[in-house]
Structures are given as structure tokens and as C-alpha cells.
Image (tube, rainbow, N blue to C red; front, side):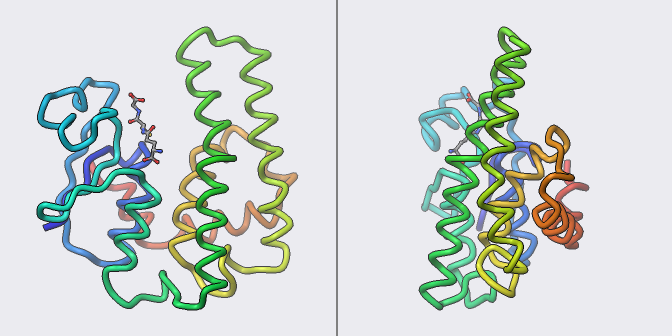
Amino acid sequence: MLTIYGTKQSRAGRCLWALEELKLAYQHNPLSPHAGDTRTEAYLKLNPLGKVPTLTDDDFVLTESVAICYYLASKQPTPLWPEDPRARARIYQWSSWATTELEFHLTMWIREKRGNADASLMAKYLENAAGSLTPLERHLATSAYVAGSAFTIGDINAASALAMGAALLDMSAFPASKSWLEKCLSRPAWQKVQTLG
Ligand SMILES: N[C@@H](CCC(=O)N[C@@H](CS)C(=O)NCC(=O)O)C(=O)O
């Protein structure tokens, strides 16, 4: 049995999206780090950082949201996980971009907001986040999805990061990214995740 820990608003959201796209049976344990749920002895055994998400698949324990998405997609043949090495490479590329570029700056913004809330630093983090969209915009000007003409797990990893930041950024400067995001977020699986507790 698959169990995913973490609320839909956290990085567990991308894993829930993947589970729904893949129509896998799972249990959802919406632990919130902000409520202290992830600091219990039992949870720290699964994820020593006390962060979400964590996936358990029977006795197999996996952390890191994009790795969880790769694992879920690779459990069965699916168009979300194409075999073509170049499509796979694009999936890795845009998933890495999502976490180490876009998500990094957005996380800095959130931390600053919850901490000192220095307005000039917060503006700088948003400027950095917007700047990180430049390569995505260029790529999506000629590609329907991040790995080519079909929706893949790479779109889940990248669009879930942008979903977190789009409301904070002026997306009119990034029309291809904006319409790609809307297309991804209109999918029934993402819509279903929004209804979860
Ligand atoms: N690289 C990790 C990041 C996980 C992460 O930072 N999760 C946040 C919620 S989105 C968290 O649990 N924060 C609690 C904390 O930092 O103590 C992943 O993608 O899974």
C-alpha cells in the first residue's frame, strides 16, 4: 500500500497530483510541519529532516518530492514516463530547474515573509523567481510540454512549483509559461487534489 505524508499545499501536492494522474490506490496522511505533526518520533524515523512529503510503499520509504514522482511514474508503463532518453533528460532537466531554481527563490520569499519580512529582500527573491522563468518561457515557446508534445511527470514537477508562485509573479511577461501552467492545472487530477483535505 502506498501512503503519502503531507498536505496538498506543501510539496506533497506534486506527489498527490502524480498519484491521481496515475490512478494509483493510496492513503493520504496530511501531516503539516507547521502544526508540529512532523516532529514526532515515529515520523522522524521516516524522514529525519521532519519535512514533507514522505512516501511509503510497504516497507520502502522515500523522501524528496521529485524523486517520489519519478518512482510513482516508473512503477508501471505510462506516457507520463516516456522511455526516450531525450524525453527523460528533459524531465530531469525541468524537475531540477523547478526545485533548484524557481522553488529555491520562492522558498526564500516565504521564509523571509514568515521571519523578518524585509520588503526589499522579499522583492529581490520575487525578482529572482521571475528571472528563473526566462529559460522555461523560451523552451515552451516551441514545445507544448516540458518534455515535448505530451504531458509527463516533468510537467507535474515543474507546474506544481510554478502553481505556488504564479500568483506572486507578473505572468503576463511569460505568456507561454502562463498558458502551459493553465493547461496543466486544468487537468482533472490536479483539480481532484484541490478537493482533498
Ligand atoms: N527538497 C524537499 C523539500 C521538502 C520541504 O522543504 N518541505 C517543506 C514543506 S513544502 C517542509 O516540510 N518544511 C518544514 C520544515 O522545513 O521544517 C522536497 O522536495 O521534498
